[in-house]
Length: 316
Image (cartoon, rainbow, N blue to C red; front, side, top):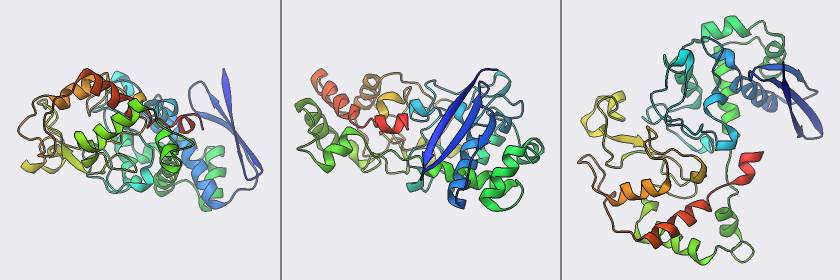
C-alpha cells in the first residue's frame, strides 16, 4: 500500500504521521507533548480518519482539502455510497473567532458542529456509537487520547479534539494582511487599490464581508433565487423571516474556494459579480442591491479579492 509521511516539527520535537492512500492513519511516532498539543493532534488524526463514515470511505479531509483552503472544488461534496451532500463545503479557517456554524448558522459550537456531517445521511451516515466501535481499541487512538485526556476514547474526546484541531486553522497572512501591517514594504498596485475602494466604499461589500475575516459571521439573505429543496435558514428554524438566509461566507482565499454560493452554482468570480449587479429576489436584504459595474471595475474588484489569498496558510 502506497503511503505518504507528514513531518511536523514543533518545539524541538518531531512528530511523524504516516497516512496511507486511503487517508487512514497507520503509524504515529511521537515523544513528549503537552495536553493541548496532544488534543490538537488527536483531532488532526480524526479529521483524516475515513472510519468516521459508515462505509469507511469519507473523512472530514475528503471534503475539506487544505490546498483548497479546506473546500473541495465541487458544487456539492461526494458522500458515502455515491450520495451527494446537501450543500457546498464551506471553508474551515479562522473558526476560533466564529460563533455560528454551517450555512444555516444554527449550530453554536464547533463541538456540536462535528456531529452534523458524521450523522448526515448523505455525508458520513454514521454515529458516535459506530465510530467508537471501530476506533476505541485502536492502538494509535488509545495512545493519543490518553495523552490528550488521560482516558479511553469517548464521544466527548471525538468532538472536543476535532473542534480543537479546527481552531488552529488560521489564515491571517495574505498579501492584504501584509499591506495592512506595512503598506510601504508590501504595497498593492493601482488596480488592487482601485478594487479595494470599490469593495470598501462604492459597492459597500464590506457591510456583510467585514474585516478582519471578511464576513460578519451572521445569516443574511443576498436575494439569490432559491430552489424548492433549499430555503436557507428557514429549513432549520421554520421562521418566515429566515427564508433565503445563509451564513455570510468569508472572502479570504476566495480566489481558490470556487464554486461559490451555498449550492456551488457559480463557477467564477465574474459570475458572482454579475449576480450581485442584477435583480434580487424579494427576500434579499436591503443592503444588497443591484449596481452598475464596468468591465474595468470588475477586473479591479477581482484583483483586490485576489490579495486575500493566504498562500502560507495553504502550504503549512
